[in-house]
Picture 1 (tube, rainbow, N blue to C red):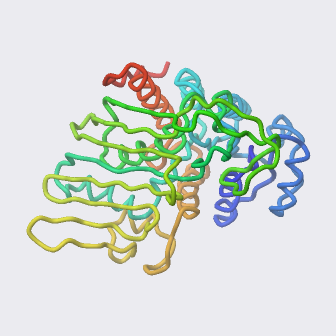
Picture 2: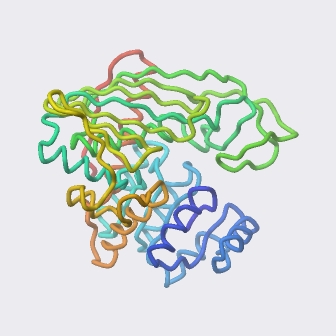
Picture 3: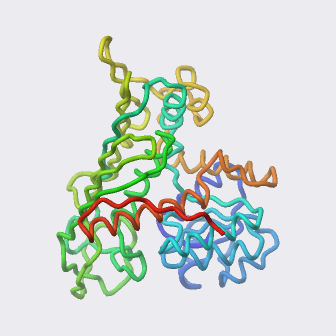
Length: 377
C-alpha cells in the first residue's frame, strides 16, 4: 500500500476482509509510515517505495498517494512487474494517463482504477437491468455529487493545491465517480460536455501543519492562500448513445456528507439510486405503482446478487464496494491475466482524464466541447 491516509486505510480494511495479506505500507515519510503501520496492526512500514518494489512477496501494489504522485508510483510498480490498483484520478493529465495505459496494456499485468461506486450491488443490478432493456432506451441521466467538508474558509486539504491535486478539484475528485458510474450504468461513454465552474471561497486559511482528509476542527496557526480550483460545477452531458445528462458537483453544500444521486429515465421506466441509502433502488412507472427494490440477493438479478456479500436487510455500504471491486481484481490476479470486463481498468481511468480535461476546457471557453479520444499507442 502506497499512501497512509483515509482512503489507504479503507483499501487495507477491504483487503483484510478478503483474506489478502498486506505486507506493508509506504508513507509520505518513514516516521508517518511507521506510525500508520503500527496503528493498523500491519508489519513494519517500508522505508521507501524502492524497498517495497524489491520485496518479492509483493504481487500487487495499491496506489493511494496524492494525485501528483500517481503516475510515477504506478509506472514504477508496473515496471517492477507488479499488478496495480490506482486511486482516481489515474494521473494529473491525460498525457500521463495515456502513458500508464500503454505501459499497463503492454505488460500483461492486471491494472485497475479505483472507481468503487460501480460495485454497490444495486448499481450492478441496475446496469444489468438497463442492458436487458428493463427501462427501455435511456433518454435522460440526472443527479449530483455533493459534500460539505470544504464549506468553510478554514477547511483545508492537499487537494486544494493544484500542484498536488491537479487543476480540477471537485470535478476530478468526486464528479469523476458520477461520470464513471453513469457511463457504466448506461453502457455508453460521454460524447460531449458543457460545463460551468466557480470558486466561491477564493482565499482559504491553510494550517501550518498537516491535515487529514475529512478532519474537523480548526488549526490555531494558518496562512492565507489564494484558491483557483473549483468549489462547484454544473455540467451538461451528452452520451454516445444519444442520452442527455446533467450533473451538479459541490464540496461546499452544507449538510451533505457524501451525497451521490443518479436517476435514469428510460422510454419505458425510470430508476433512481442514492449513495446514502444504498440498499434501495427506486423504480418509476407510468401506468402502475412505483416500486422500491431492496438489496436482496433473492430479489435482484444475477449481477446484483453476485455483488452482494450479505442477505437482504443487512446493510452493505461504502467499504463493501472496495471489497467487491478487489474480489474481481484479485480473481484476475489469481487467473494470471487482466479481465477488463469485470472491473474498471486504466482504460477507464484514462477516459475520465480525457473527459475531465474537456470539462475544464468547456468551462474556460464557455462552450460545449466534444470528447476527442486518441487510441493508446
